[in-house]
Image (cartoon, rainbow, N blue to C red; front, top):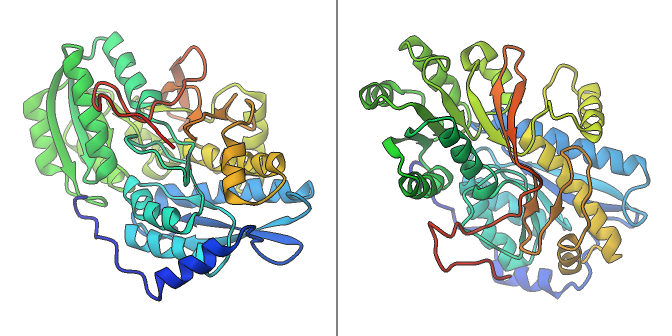
Amino acid sequence: MGNLRPIRKFGGSIAAAGELFIARSEPTGGANHTVKVGVLHSLTGTMAISEVTVKNATLLAIDQINATGGVLGKKIEPVIEDGASDPSMFAQKAQKLIQQDDVVTVFGGWTSASRKAMLPVFERFKGLLWYPVQFEGNECSPDIMYSGAQPNQQILPALQWAEQKGYKSIFLLGSDYVFPRTANLILKKHIEHDSGTVAGEEYVPLGGTDFSAVINKIKVAKPQIIFSTLNGDSNVSFFKQMAAAGLPSAKLPVMSFSIAEQEAKAIGPSLLEGSYAAWNYFQSIPDPANKKFVAAYQAKYPGSPVDDPMAHGYVDVYAWAAAVKKAGTFDIDKVRKAAATLAYSDVGMGETKFAANQSLVQTAYVGQLLPSGQFKILWQSKGPVEPVPYDPLSFPGKSCVL
């Protein structure tokens, strides 16, 4: 996974703790009048630019549900932890939340490296993670609810849109870890299948700031568009250095898969103006429930934009609460099964629901950044798109079996 460190061994007796955890048939999550949930995001490090606001949106949903009486007569008590932009820390904090804090579920994660580090923890101790960010697919676990986009709901619709606009020569740029590399593997398969050209493929360490060599290669390759899976604050350096090199987005378009309204504000809309992004939510979607969500968030955090991962973090809490109510219990297995049978609902990002494969059915959008820092929606799918965890062209014969 590039520069990312491997998972450190957990302290204490995992086997003994696991037996204690698994022996409980009905996790209570806390005192009689509260139920504990984990909120696990990077509050420090290179990913904090993106994850702090997802934590905030998650807490907003919890506050709103508590204001209406909570869930099954219990108020939701969030236990907040910092993954510190380090996959091994995410694994350690996930274990702490499940074993020590006795949470009934966890909301969190951003990078696929953090999710993959947490996955064995949730599988071993039978927890349930609600993961709110777009990712590379090629994974299917009963212990994760994947609300972020699968490839067929984000990167492939973006490619289809770009091809329709006449962009045939594409340069692939990403941070060096599992999501960008797998996403680009899928993109390469489809670009070649569609008779396009991969003009180049480059990676930088997560958090990397020196793009001089990459920009020189881009100049030589002369692509028509860049597809960027750069994550975190590396984007600040990339767009600044591209502009300094005479390649602003107005001259060489960039399609980003990890830049949304929050990152645009942090980087500066003037640097990103004219660039494209593909998501399943933009603050600008004309949805009445979205307007209520945005108004509620900005009342609590004045002047702060709202973006796709935030909307997914918000939706995840409401979906969990609805699943608990449908199941009539906080039992993790029963809640998981109930979540995959909920009807369509809209709490801020249009009609969505979880499919049987525990991934979200949702609409795909392509937008272009305006000087205001908001996105003008250029294209959207005809309706909610069913999630496909394993791209048939890239991973033939593989399917999701829970």
